[in-house]
Image (cartoon, rainbow, N blue to C red; front, side, top):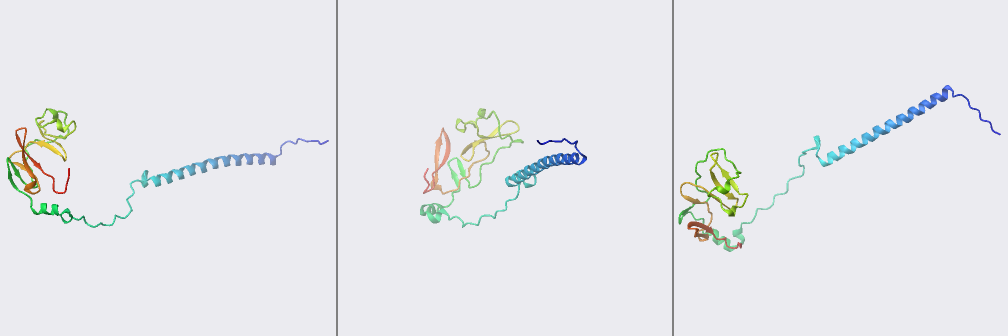
Length: 196
């Protein structure tokens, strides 16, 4: 038969138990701090790779610029019809009620500033046409007068003063004078080699 004797805990055992408890608590705290440090390190790495936080944001582009390409070959060197069209020169002069002036449009009337680019009452203007739809580009003066309605770069209507200058660049052969709704109009014919 084996006898067990229970001795009261000695000072050494009590101290040893306290140390083990402290070591367990220290391990638990140390584990928490290591886990927090790992999470922070992962977050900083993700921010650096994504480039969206603090010192990592808006980094300059360090890739080299693309190498310069060769310049585009003018169409007149490739297509003989285009070369013949360009050889005719750019027409400048009167055509019906219009004055054809390359790179120079008709003068605009005086318009008190500031301009408003968007207005709700553009459909009441005499310049408006249903062709413009519901969201054209509209210029309205400070006094409420609309001076221009357009759908850039396709078409538009505006008030002008002086002669009706048309900023057309091309030969006379490609201009056609028309009458639309009782008013004079100019139409351009497509350049040779360009189909619509």
